[in-house]
Image (cartoon, rainbow, N blue to C red; front, side, top):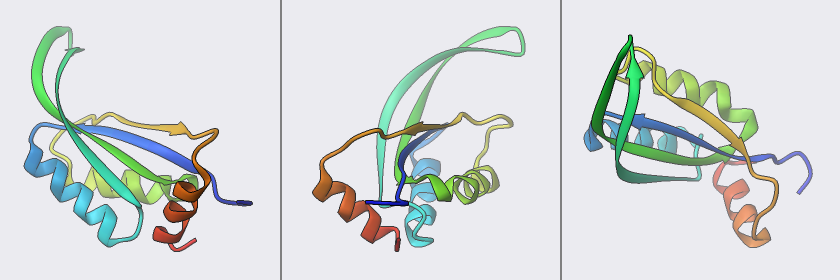
Length: 107
C-alpha cells in the first residue's frame, strides 16, 4: 500500500465523556478509522507534585498525514493544559485491516 503510512495516536482525557466527544469528532471528520477507549489509572508528576488519577485513554487508528489535524482537534476540545498526544508508527499489520483503514480515511 504505497503512500499510506498507518499510525496509532494516543491521548488521555479526564472523563469518558470528553474522550468520546473527541473520538466522535475525529471519526466524523474522517481523520480516524477507529477510536478505542480504555479506562485507566495514571500516576505522573505535574508541576513538581505526584498525582494519581482515573483517565480514559484514546487509541486512534489513522494515517501519518492526519497527525496535524488530529492534534489540532484534540487540543481544541481537551480540558488539559498539556495533554499527552503521542504518535507511534505501525511498521506492519494484517493487510486486509490496513486496506480497511485506508478506505475509511478516504485515502
